[in-house]
Image (cartoon, rainbow, N blue to C red):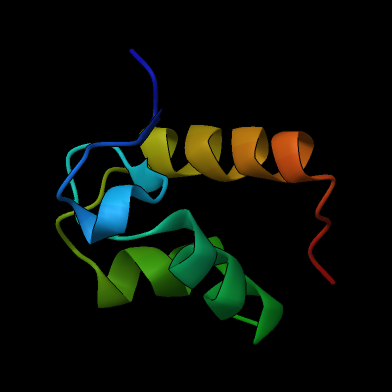
Length: 68
């Protein structure tokens, strides 16, 4: 299962965490602001830990982005 999806009509077709309307750009911004995985999971209790880890890892690799 791919942890990142792009669906026309969902978040303007931008990459999102699979099964949600949370864009990867939004998650990247939160991590850049210093949010930890634990805080993301606390603020978004409907998220599952491993798909979130997988999605952020794939996103970091695909965009050459590194969290601070």
